[in-house]
Image (cartoon, rainbow, N blue to C red; front, side, top):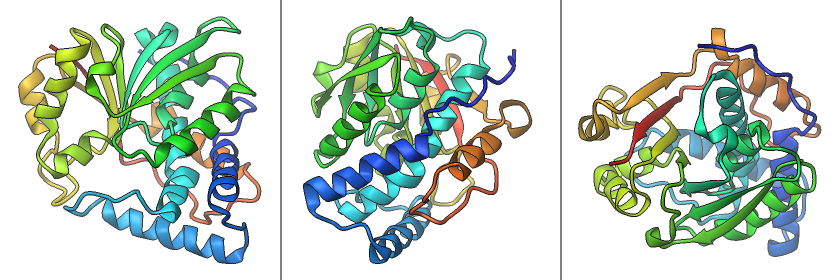
Length: 277
């Protein structure tokens, strides 16, 4: 059942991630903000666009690539998480006080969920962030610090690369992490590792609907077979959930915009829901 879309909040996700990334570049890497940087960011953006449909694992160790992802894709995903959550009638994520984030990166799902949370002002959401790329830690810290300074609901996060540190009984979330493991054929074994720790909980993953290499074979086919009939896929329908309009509006109100690419079509993503067992 679809509810009316809530009004866009004053906290702009594109500005949040862009400002945090600029701080990251200046404070930790001494990269000046100038025309050359804008060119680099747009070049890296175009590379990422192609890599999402390639067979190889995507390397995010480059500072430029991390910055490009954080300034464009992270806010897009954060908006989608917020809009999706506000468009469903029931979800344990509304009042979740503990979450397990898989492949957290710069924290798009954390920001989107916290922004849509129905927890009372002054509450906090404790998140265990499982991330194999240590390079994201600094940027994630900045993003969450900046978000907490502007949000009535705070995020308390722990960064780890150890699956066994995940919270038992807490919902599992992630953005474009299934497709990463789909590239090296490790989706099922990866999810089984998580299930062995977190127990019987729901998982929600924002990701591509198909395997990125050939565009025909569903990349989560093994997951659906493994978890059927508990797996459910939500198509992010533009006409009902307003994803494209929300992303475009939020991007359009961020000035200046260091990555010039404008969102002009609905997101080619799905929300995959299933229960770990």
